[in-house]
Length: 597
Image (tube, rainbow, N blue to C red; front, side, top):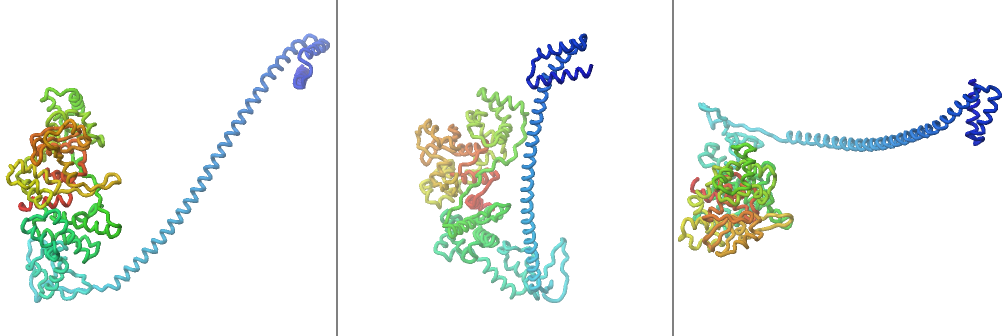
């Protein structure tokens, strides 16, 4: 039976593949033959065979196609993996080649450094072999004796030098006398240090040659005598006289030491200036920093002498370009804010209330006072903010009188009243006397003796741009040298009485940076602090300057470069706040406090 079924399946498959008899014909033939051989079982077998054949035909071909598709996808995936591996292999080979090259370069540099180090060592050894050092000295000139007793530990100095081959021994070094303190040596001190007369005279001759008298240097030139007379008789010099003095001293430096004298030489000359002319000595620091201050902490040297030397070198080597100031004129953000008295949630609630209320005034002032620390922190924590952006968040700062001064008082309680309290008794007369040497101030100072103290203080503020001129500065790629008129307008803009305030406040100048507006000629009729196009009227010009200065701190904005030196002077000298100082500021401060030293 099984054999018969297999035979039937093979026959049916053969007929199907080769396109022979159709299914009906085959069925008829099988039916007749089956009936002859085994009639009872033929129908059943034929039905089973027909069913199996149909299933085979329907299932066999789809399975093969599916398997082929899977195999094709697998081959494609393998090809992609092979390509990726080939790419990674090429990259690895290139990296290995680069590392090999770098390693060879490092080995080459190491060999060069090793050779250089060995050659330097040999040179030092040779230098030490060639150098002969020998000295002999004693504590006393002759005989023996005791030294002391002393209540504190001292350094014994062998002052009597017999032999000093190679100049390795220096009795002055033992007394901790450096190049700067040589200026202060008098005859008594020199006698104690160098008791032998012959050696002492030689040393004094050397000292005289090394430390030229500034007075003699100035008197040896045609313009120097007038400078010396001005310093000794009037205790001050004008801007032009100071510039001429610097030119004379720098010419002397270049003539003796070249274009690049050592820092010690410049310190010595600067020290000599303030020692021989005490009225030029600053009351802070060592007193001579206005003339020369050595560079430190990666910052360049400054001072009149250094700036002149730098300009001379530039003119000689590059055709002459003035030094351009690009530094930030104010660094007020560095001070530490006081602790807040209210928490952040309460401060936020009060800030929202202040945005929508301007009355009652007492509550507005109280809420502004309580939120001042949070406001200052918000201004400084959110990067650079314009006055307009701050005004949108805190509108009461400008439309409520006294809020700027109140915020400044909380931030800097020790400095808030220094300008209004000290300008008249401390600064006014000195500033006017210092400015009297300048030609641009002749009209302002023509009848200053007949003015009241308040009017004199107004004039003193107006002449600050003359005695504190702004150096060259750069905006983008353009270089600017502001004139006296431009500097004064950026500080105090003087307009005639009857100026149309609406038109003035709509102009660009009223919104560029905070400044003072004075209505009147030489005397103030009305005074305003102009901030972001808003005119805050004040009772006096002094009060307007005070509010304007405090606005820079409250809004945390930089001074305008046209008059930054004036604001920096008020910041550091008058208000006593830390900040950068220019040589011209130091000279003016030295003159103001000369009588108090």
